[in-house]
Length: 214
Image 1 (cartoon, helix red, strand yellow):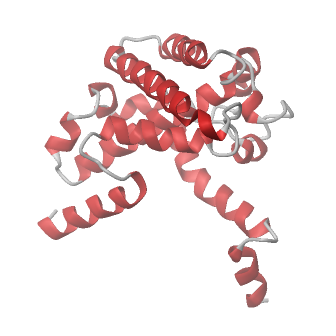
Image 2: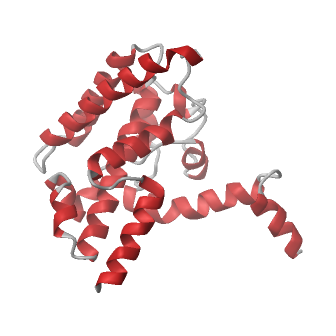
């Protein structure tokens, strides 16, 4: 890959993730936005300082847990323990297990994607900043699929209520109902699933354009 191609790859990453100097921070921060938008409640407008303190503390716990993750780890146990730690930071009333899984699962999904991209563009420096667990693409089979409404509907997981209110037992049951799907499958499926929902949203531009074609 030549220098221009590498710059173009980096530009696309920065457009979505912002500063990529620290890929772990970039993944955790973007995953937080994915999780918290429209679901993280309980903070008044003047409580932003507390909100950021809790986010910072929880982000630190994710980073520490990632440092301990290796190929020999029992991934499901690691995941369960980390979800519990995040809930303790916020207290269970403010962060559900469903929200914790989304934050963790999007973080690990992004890190796996970063690793694949950095390898493809021979970015050894970028790759070196990512936990070694993600260097082996085969470990994608261990990672959990981030559960949200679109995925739960598309994979016919069943009615458990909003993903953001799942408890630990409900989450485990949802995982068991994914039909053997892996995160690699979800990477391929998610784009089509999201596209369909945009097209079905009567208020979306995608819906408007689709109807213009008819």
